[in-house]
Length: 329
Image 1 (cartoon, rainbow, N blue to C red):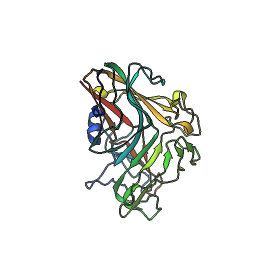
Image 2: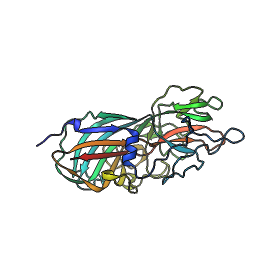
Image 3: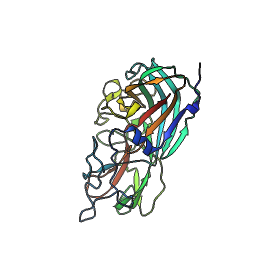
């Protein structure tokens, strides 16, 4: 039996590279000016209810349409991955009996994804049985970390309050927001602790860059509804349209899990994300296979503004991360 050493699973952190290889449609990003500053629209009083635009049309965004949020690439994207493997049968009902794991660690493997950086995962040696695998399985924490700073074309107000802003903005609050807060916007109990209330801004702005910190979002629900209502069946199971290119192309299904790996039933016990990709083309593993994990962070976060006529920036949000695999024989 051949044992594959940890140096055969390399995690690729090159954000631009990943987006080129693993995205079927173009990545929409905030429209920026020649200096790279996010363009902030302003009316006669210097503000706008829809201050930003995305530069590319996607399923969710229409190019150059004024709106209250647009997509950015974080400076650092922090994930905690518990399990990563290949399966011969569909694991989306939480049956992992057919799966071969590259790793499964109770505490998880924390990775900080930065542009242009590659690293070797600190995991034990592993062995993947030769065979054909039509499913990729990833289990990760529902608490996602984001660190970002950037420039705006016009003054923007953040957590320091009206009149104290500027064109430099950054993640300033180390707390965590719930992706689907209760309808009253109050702080709520999550599997990772108490969330911030919805009215707490996690970005600040000024005339010079301040202290940039990680801010966090807990994905408490996939459905577009508040945490005042229950989760859907099988951990709010959701299936997306086909995405990816090449060997990474497939149909993703996501479920929320508790800390004990059962299907989550409430926002409060949604501790993990189970991500299954039904691959268009199965991976074929041989004794000589090598493996590379890729994590897409390009356009992974969105910066959100107030819908009032005030140019207030509110927060940095995150969707479910895209994690892919390349098998080379």
